[in-house]
Image (cartoon, rainbow over all chains, first blue to last red; front, side, top):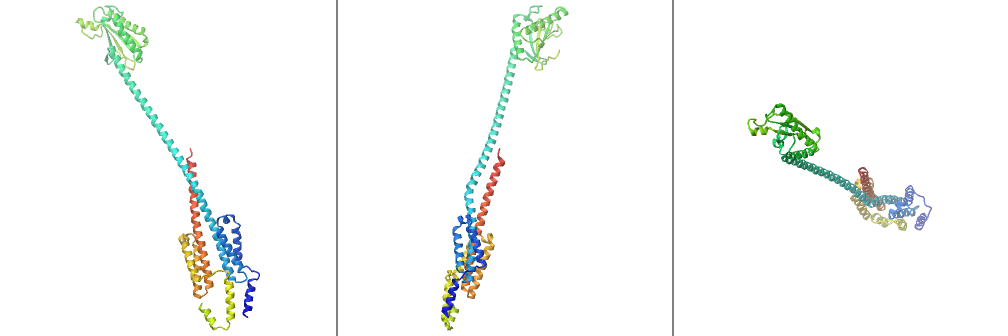
Length: 287
Length: 131
């Protein structure tokens, strides 16, 4: 009886296998995973463990359904473990590779930013430089103006002209003319030279030359003399290159004395030619 | 093991019983079986390991499967079904291993995603700022 039981049990182990649903599922799952090159490459050990469970399940076929299902279940779970391990390692591989890439891209971004800020810095340097040049130019101009002003002041001083409301007044005294005559003496010529130089340099200025006399002699004679003396100075200036349009000559005779006609000194003072130099506007206000 | 002892003492079918036991040994030989307490300890350890990698958050379904299997294994020990208890405990261990790898994988993929996104963002920024 005992031998028979054992024999039945032994024969049962060697019979044709009838697969359970769990085993069929496990087989399918394993086939899929095993034929996946990614899983094969990344989780070979886990796959192997799945295969071992599958073999144990197959070995128990026909002997004990519970054991078959037990190992089939384990096989299926190990297949899932293999697949998940593969995904996990794929992510790890990506991170390892991409970290280098990320650093590279980050460096490029930083280089770009550095270049941009360098450009900005260069631009503001250029702007600052331009401003500096402008300021220098302005300063030079100002200095030049000052120099010109100084020069002008100096020249005016040299002219020995007097500043009045009507402009700069240069007085040519009586001794520069012969008595009763209108032609200029040598002494006057130096003054006229200086005056023409001045006018040729400061071209925006004009002159009015006014002849004056004392009360000695007739009025018409004095008018004529004063006019002719003024014109003599005018001609002298024109001969020295001063444009005629800038020079006016007028005779006032005895009408505008500067000293007393009762005294010798006063009369001599009245006998004069006044050269009035305009301001920058180029006009001389009338008497 | 008390049940077997009683049967052995009382029975006149000792040879049958011996044959049956031999058969069980043959069947049992298809898989190595530890004593249930050791299997249970292994399961508990595997579940703890899974929890340590945040399987509670990242693979909660798989972890719950492992835990309920462990509970069933403990119940079978109570009933004296040591064979079945051992199997359930082993299944619980593998279930816990699956929960663990699912959790690790989820974390790894999140890291990969974040890295991919940050590279993308950087590239886009470079494009935008190109003179």
